[in-house]
Image (tube, rainbow, N blue to C red):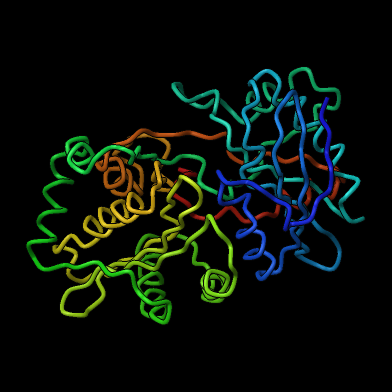
Length: 350
């Protein structure tokens, strides 16, 4: 039986998942979301669960649960679990809430086979449920497909497990004088210019500058053990060539956002940047490095195939999550919302 208890954000204790941390609750609150925390008990598992409420207009709300629950649920029980969880969460949602969106952290049942149609996936998820109410969301918020590195290994072992071209480019970048610095946050403007250039070059959606300001502001002003944010810059002769925002939470380092200039890409700054980020994560005692998003398979025709080759070149293994699933509360209004929800140009949707 599932039990849910409302708790304060301060009493959350999740140490494994950035999206379910106190840090993320404060960041999203500054961005206009209302965080609500719970203690969840299910079949001997106990963990905190963080839900966010957003009000896109004066007429309605929706709820979003990123990468939770952190404990595993057998595939045949997932629909029933989410149905029961949704029914209990409804008591804490405002009137006018259209749906609950779950960004599921669980491995996809289609890890080793092509994903079937949306209809088949919904039938499989709803098997055994009473209401048959779970729907595959029109879009995935966090990337469901990613690449994970085990960085508990020593430096030489990590290099051996990379593609030879990746090792070569790391060393080439170093020989050509590219250096990586753990930059001060006052260099966010420089990084954001590169980030804007990168988004335009690759045709991906652009996050507002204020979102990054708030992310770094929380890092600077909140005393939250277990979480660190770093702004890393790869540069030559004090000219920035690439940069990233790296999050460290618990045992996992996550490459949250990256950026690079179009010029001087022959210096391979992004390779040097990733390698130094991995080395920093090792120094901070992280055991895993999440490259945070790849296309779902190695398809040369994919518009982001270059990104796939770049990230998989560092070794590791691919993880395919189930993506976003919705539990509609107001069926008619949900269908109208889902039909109009913009589907962004993201690498994981092709």
